[in-house]
Amino acid sequence: MADADGDGEFGVDRILADIHGLVAQNTGGEVADYIPELSKMDPTPFGIAVTTVGGAVHGIGDTQAPFTIQSTSKAFTYCMALEAIGRAKVLERVGVEPSGDPFNAIEFDPVTRRPYNPMVNAGAITVAGILRDVHGDAAFDEVLARLSAAAGRRLVLDEAVYRSEAATGHRNRAIGHLLVSVGALAEPMEPALDLYFRQCSISVTARDLATMAATIANMGDQPVTGREVFDIAAVRDTQAVMFTCGMYDYSGNWAYDVGVPAKSGVGGGIMGVVNRQLGIGTFSPRLDRKGNSVRGVESFRLLSAELGLHAFDLTNPGSAFVDSFFAGAGRS
Ligand code: GLU
Image (cartoon, rainbow, N blue to C red; front, side, top):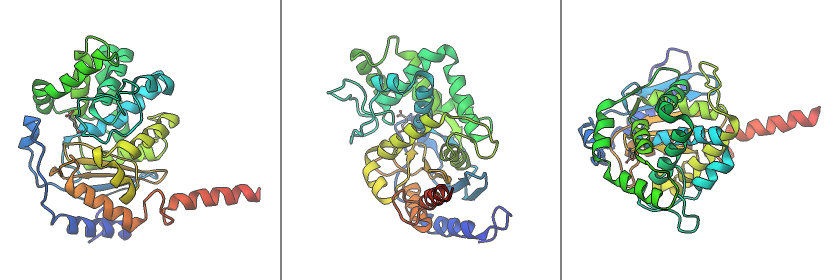
């Protein structure tokens, strides 16, 4: 492939083009249909974008096609809750244990009587409750502003998807009632649910996801604008939960095969964080049975192998970073 970004860097663009070409042939999976508006999505767009912590953006395919962020928003709202009320108070309300069950399971941890983790709906709705407690009616504006700061552009709400989910989200309402019954969520629960439906309906692109992920990879500082968006301690905790719980009940396989903290959404997006190095965003709407984008998973698997991105891979330049850091320390 030619130099897509016109920046003279052929290596990564060539790898992205090869992976895109290969994975585009896979037409497996189905577009999500349990939110009526999502079932109308065009299943064909496919984009892969990468943003480095130095602020370089590379992409191939439909990297500017809009889709709703859905569950990928959960990583950011969790980060915001940690910042707002502190780790200890958040842990009192939401755990950090993988559930092994589907994202929309109507359940809580029977031992703690709290949601298992913030990446499943029960946990994310509780996190929305925390943000409502802190910000009141301004909570959605706060979320939108923060996600926009991470993307480096003003994001907007997809009204049609929001209305569709708000009108039909009975399962999430059932989760809300369960949370109220165990004291994890305060009454009235409707404002927390509304915030949750809205945060899921923010419109993004693969390029946005890559840059938002790069903001996390860059310890909370947006790599293009240079703005400090998230607190470094909250970013660390968020990545840990993404690593163990971010890919629905496929999280174990993902950690084993791909090895990067990630979060997917039923809108077809996946965001991956290569700590201190890269953010990766993919978009392709057809999902597998666990709710992850089929082409997204395949793209990440190939990218991780090709670039040596697995957290525990010897080829991961992260280890080179630590190596040089300690070597430098030794010399002084
Ligand atoms: N808004 C969706 C729901 O709560 C998000 C699901 C997802 O992306 O996992 O059902």
